[in-house]
Image 1 (tube, helix red, strand yellow):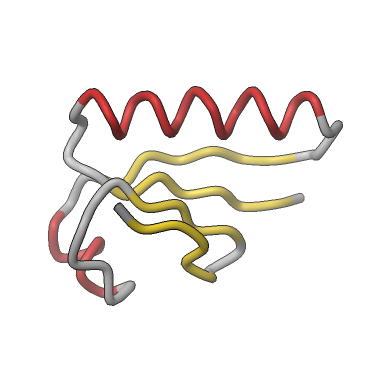
Image 2: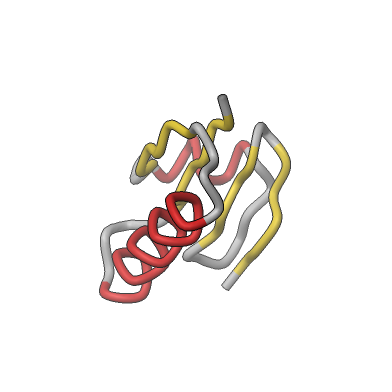
Length: 64
């Protein structure tokens, strides 16, 4: 199972990334768990300074 994290404060772009990520994972038939992370300290712990960001299995894949 893939662990997908959306890092962001809940802005429109964060929500758009979450929707697109979920749609893509479903289309690809990936078994996944999607979580939205809004806590600034947790976001910074990934080294992310710009949101939204996508993290797949602990690896930051997309920022800003």
